[in-house]
Structure formats: structure tokens, C-alpha cells
Amino acid sequence: MAIDQVDPHEVERAAAATWPASTVRPDAGWLLRHCGVLDRKRSNSALPPAVVDDPAAAAERVERFYAGRGARPVVQVSPLEAHRELDEFLAGRGYAAIARADAMVAGTADVIASAVAREFAVRLDTGPRDGWFAAGAGAGRPVEPGLDAVRAPARFAIAFAGPIPVGVGLFALAGQWCGVYCMATAERWRRRGVAGTLLRAGARWAAEAGATRMFLQVEADNPGAVLLYERVGFARSHGYHYRVR
Image (cartoon, rainbow, N blue to C red; front, side):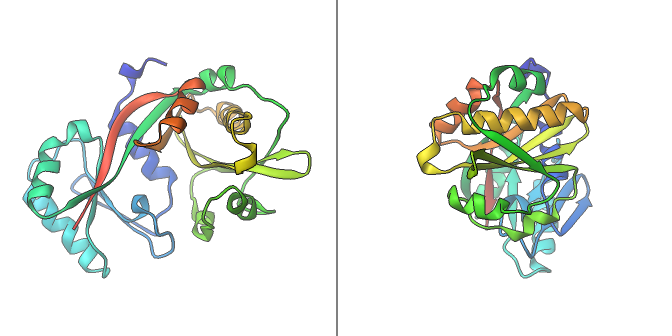
């Protein structure tokens, strides 16, 4: 898949459709999101439209929304490359930049072809049952019960070495896109192909469901993860960060 054929705004709308928030309010092209269960910035931030004509009016609208919920206003400035003006305006209004990250994309066929399955088996469940949270905790992920609120068609993946759970992932569909979330590998099993095996299994499921593209988010200061994803076919689409006041 050619990276120049990907619309970053489309990627972000697919991410909004696949990640849970108890309230998602469309407002003048914005998506205002709030969640009383998941303490995640993606669940509790405002996502701008492709064009923001009046940053001041937009900021006031965002601030009213979060004030009504007793929460600090947070804006996910994404794609950052398209929203420099908005970003500068928010900085001048006292919003601090946090959590810089990159979105990466790949074709499902590329991931299937590139990610090498090794000695690990993968189980894909329709919900986070039968030890998915425990397996994630064993791999260093915080337990987030609110993930069972994922509304999109999804598969909760556990990788096993024999009977031992060694890694987890979450795959969720929105149209032709499959979002990749919650990837984690138990420490003693890292750099042995667990993540690649999980991604390949998720890509196969996504392709069978009709998805041709995948996306994920990775912290910009995590070069090891970036390299891992590049090895299985992912490339950078765009950057983003959050502005919080």
C-alpha cells in the first residue's frame, strides 16, 4: 500500500470508530469524546475536522463540553501536520502539549506476508474473556475493564507458547480499516516473534472480514516498537499529540 494514498483524517475517523468512549458528540465537524470508564486520552479528547476555520470558537465549544462533565479540556491535534495553526492557537491559550505519537498504516496483505508466525499459537475471541486481561497484565499492560465496551467488530487476541499466555493484542474494524491496539508481550518472550505472530493473526482475520488496511498508534520516542512495526509492513502516516489545559 502506497503511503501517499492514505488520508490521515480517514485514519483518525477510523480510530475514533474503533476505540470506545461513552459519549461521542459530533459538533461542527469535531468529535467530542468523553468516557467515565476508560482513563485514556483517546477516549477523553476532542478530535478536530480536516479544516478548522475559527480556532477560538472551536476552543470555546470544546471547553464548554468538558466543563459540563467536570473534566479538563483536551484536544487531540491530529494530524499534526495539517493543524499547525490550531496547535499554535491552543498553545497560546495555555494548552500544554503531551503524549507525542505517530500513526502508522499498512496493507493487511503486506502484514500477512511480512509477519512470520513462529512457535506461538494465537486465539482470537470476540470479547476480553478467558484470561485476556490477566494475560495483558502479565505482559505489563494495565487492566482496563472498559475495553469490553468496544462497539466495532473486534477480536481480542492472546498468543500462547504451549499453555502459557505470552502476549496480547486487540483488533477492531471500521469499514476497510482494522485498528491495532493493546499490543504487549511478556518480558521474557520479547524479540522472539510474539508481536509478529499476533499481527499476522489479526491481519488474517481483518482480511477475511473485508478490511484491506490496518493502522496503529505508537509513542514517538519508542524506536524499538517503530522498527518492529516497520518490519511487518507498517509505515508512518502522520504525527499527533494532545493539548490539555
